[in-house]
Amino acid sequence: MTGTRTITAGNLPDLQDALMIDGVHLPSRLIMGTGGAPSLDGLGAALLASGTSLTTVAMRRYSPSETGSLFQLLVHHGIRVLPNTAGCFTARDAVLTAELAREALETDWVKLEVIADEHTLLPDAVELVDATEQLVNRGFKVFAYTNDDPVLALRLENLGATAVMPLGAPIGTGLGILNPHNIELIVSRASVPVVLDAGIGTASDAALAMELGCDAVLLATAVTRAQNPALMGEAFKHAVIAGRLARAAGRIPRREHALASSAMEGRAEFL
Amino acid sequence: MNITLNGTGHTVASGASITTLVSEVTGRSLAADGQATDGRKLGVAVAHNAQVVPRSQWSTTALAEGDDVELVTAVQGG
Image (cartoon, rainbow over all chains, first blue to last red):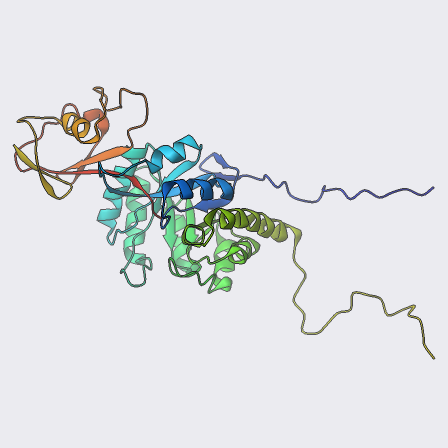
């Protein structure tokens, strides 16, 4: 009897395998930032195309002249908000900003950014550790934006960070993942979610982050400043899923020399 | 009386509460618990002399001459 074989997806992980953070299901593993978008309408379209479930916002002085509300846009689309402490250089400022965000947006989740200077925008490790400790003690769920330093990442986790978010490259550079080895090391030792944050330039960078074992990717500029933000948002949606699947599937080992995939045996011989 | 709101001079009625100030600046009507009466999220927070004031305490917090108030909201970023 000749039967047809059916390829089943039995060994594939569920495409919808949600990210669980603080008891919350996040269907998408793509966390979006909102900085750099020229208009609120365009931003909304890009966020929807990306399929994101969680999106960062910054806290700034209220201006009555500003038209439209980003917060209302996110609420309208059912996207959970993750306030950040962007622009803070000290633990004191970061803690105050987080407290303001908790009041304004009624969430105890915070993306903690404590940067050293405006030129590099790199995290200041000493202030970051101090702020993480203070915020955890105040009941915040801290998503700590950190250097790609496996030692620091573990320190932040031990202080009670809910997630650690190592950078791939400095914010806004689009240089991709400069030290994949360190990211792998951070992933291998972490027992909290690892989110690759900052430096992503294009879809393949996000796929690589997931292949390295990251639980999610956070990016803003790569989408908001792309020539077609909505199209790039969709590209990232697929890239994160592809990278996640590839990680689960198990890549082949790297080899020094070629390995034929067609058998040599049984070749026709031409005399 | 004169206070500083978001870094610039601002005049409010003598003894005005934070609720009065926030309502005036945002153009939204606020209940005593600090929530907007239209049922939609207000989405702002207040620091009064560098201390964050929970919205539940806005109506009972009176402003004084020379006070410094920061009123913030969510904007694009991150």
